[in-house]
Image (cartoon, rainbow, N blue to C red; front, side, top):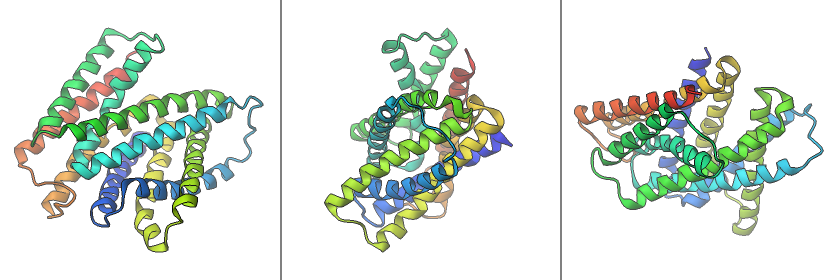
Length: 295
């Protein structure tokens, strides 16, 4: 059941990318405005979740606030880069290329934190990079600007993950499920504080804009609820591997959407190219699993 929850979480993220592309393409929303409005709503959901976890006692050492703020800033920077990439290319290709976060984290851990990895893990990193190169070139080469946005997105997510990891260690006394859930909600709450500051300067959004963005916010936050349900059932490693199936799901979802004639979201591709991308997605998922499972 836990693997199923993880896959549902991955599906929710893939659907969220489609919703974001709809707001950016059909409704002509600016990336920064969409980012701020969607995360104002997500912060509201996070606040409700924190109320349910209100029995938690915060530690006397308030260094965790720095981790939460830095995590929020780097996450928002990664999201803004992702949204900018989604404006320029198909959601399915962008989603699949987010697997590059694993090599990014590996390089940061090795060069900055002096952590060492098994040779099999380095081979897995190499396979992820080769698969990403194929996905970037399949069905037309992605522009250098698109690749730059994807690189910045994975960089922002990686630094956010590092901050979130330190945050989880601070709240470790809450338990294996509540600690990461509490930590992520705190990061989202920090994002919400940043968005409130933005809207005080720019003016608060109208109801119509809020309605358009709400589906994305609901689905995106739901993906994390399913992810933590997966964690509680099968553990963090298996849950993260299940979530990494979003690349395969996005490629399949992209094919379905294109076949329905919704080409503003996804371009039409041949069955041959679809199966090539799907195979590449499976290789990337297997490589991520190998990296995660090898100690």
